[in-house]
Every structure is written in C-alpha cells, then in structure tokens.
Image (cartoon, rainbow, N blue to C red; front, side, top):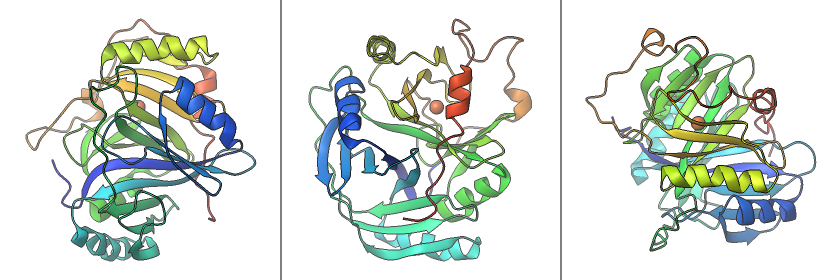
Amino acid sequence: MKSPWIQSLRSVALTVPDLSAAETFYTQVWQLEVAARGDGVLYLRGSGTDHHLLALHQQAGEPQLRQVTLRARSAESLQAIAAATLQAGGQVEHDEAPATDPAGGRRLIVRDGHGRRYEVVHGDTLRTPTDPTPADQPQRLAHAVLNSHDVAATQAFLEQVLGFVLADRTRIMAFMNCDADHHSIALGDSDNDALNHVAFLMPSLDAVMRGGGRMKDAGHAIEWGPGRHGPGDNAFNYFIDPFGIVIEYTAEVEQIDHTYRPGQPSDWTWPPGRVDQWGISAPPSARLKTAQRAVVFASHL
Ligand SMILES: [Fe+2]
C-alpha cells in the first residue's frame, strides 16, 4: 500500500549528552558520515539519498527523542496532514513553514494525543547516493519503533492523519506501512510511550553480520541477534549505543504492495522458545528490554 501523503521515513532527532562522543561512535563504529553541523547539533547521513538520518542535539541528562521526520509525497500533503491532525485530536505544533535544518524544504510539525512529535517535510535536499554503495555503511533508516500505552489510538492517528496502513498485527506490535517497505513505523504495546528503537538499513545480510562484529570489537555487545524477524522478514542485530539508545542494523526488509494481506496475532506465533526465524540467538537481553523503554519524547523544545 502507499500512503497518499507519506513517502518515507527520513530521519530521527534525538538528544545526547556528549556530541563529540556521539560523533566518534556514529562515524567510526556505526559507519555514518557527518552531513552538517549546527549550533549544538550534529547531522549524520548514510550512503543513500537522504540528507541526514540522525539529528543529534546536545542536551545534558538522559537521551530524549525530539521527533520522527517523515517525507511527504507532495506539497499539498502538508496542509492535508495539518487538517487531519486537528480532526484526529492532535496538535499542530508548527504550521507549515521553511524547515529549520540544513536539509531544507518545507515542514510541518504535529503531535498526536500522547505527545509523539512528527515532523513532515517536503522538498528537502536529496543527495546523490554514494557510488559504489559502501559495503558497511547504512543506506537509510529502515524503521522506527515507538512504544504506546494505547496502540489502537496511536495506530488510528497514523492511519487517519498520515495515511499509514496496518501491515501486520502481532501480540505485541502493530507494523505500519506507507510504501514498499513492509513497515516504516511500528508500534510496541507497552505501558509507556518511549522510543523502542531505530533501525538502519544495511546493503546486505553480510553487512548486518559484520556490523555485529564491528560493534562487539568496539565494546558494544549484540543485545539481540543475529536473527530474522517474522513480520517484515528482515535480518537483524540489536545494540545499545553509548548513551542508551537502542539501534538496529537490518537488511532484506520485505517489499510489499496493495496485494499484501495483513496478518493477525494468531498468524504470527512462534514455537516455544523461539522469537525469530533462525533460532540461533539468545532472546533479547534484559539490558535491551530496559533500554527499549528509557528514551522518551521531549515534551518541551
Ligand atoms: Fe526493528
């Protein structure tokens, strides 16, 4: 399915307490590159067309999620989304205006009823993909997973305001689709509204595996993986960054179209002791589960 309004997940903005340490980790280990620098903010890109995938803002204390940035299909989408936000009980925090980051274009910022902050951009700068594709560099974001204490309400906002479609529902997750990727946002059933994790698309399964070794060498254990998910069929390795943010290398995400039939929880069950297709990894670590509920949306910016 295609959302009539949203083309893709572009980037995620977070706060971290040490931009210098963040630059070292995200360039030397995670393999992103510096796209731009601002006053107290660092923009990091992959090898694909997006100007940046991460905007990291210097802020003392625990990391917080500032916003999830989505790219609109058209200039008209922004006004449609603003109107739908109000109808759905959300808040238009910033009316359509020129973007304030170096990717440019125009942007709208809305919050859902729980305070999740979505930036929608159109006309932002696209770069020429690095050629040849670097073998071990993320190409783009694959998905962001947001916890919700009320997934039905969060899902309804994504459907009614942003045009997402449910791809699959499991016992613990709602996978939300806006284009060919099986999911660009997923919602995790939880008792909080934290950032669960951000996934970076790697060019190959080998890159996901080599990334596991590179992270391990740098002192960041694989907290879950390697494995292959059920919904989305993507291979994964999960880690915790130096600040407590959960990040994933993934590859081979299933590509779907309007013929895809959403599965229900009863369609997505595992045999006892299994939580992925391969069954070679230990289950998610306790550290990972704790980190997956620790990064909350910044309430004031
Ligand atoms: Fe994921």
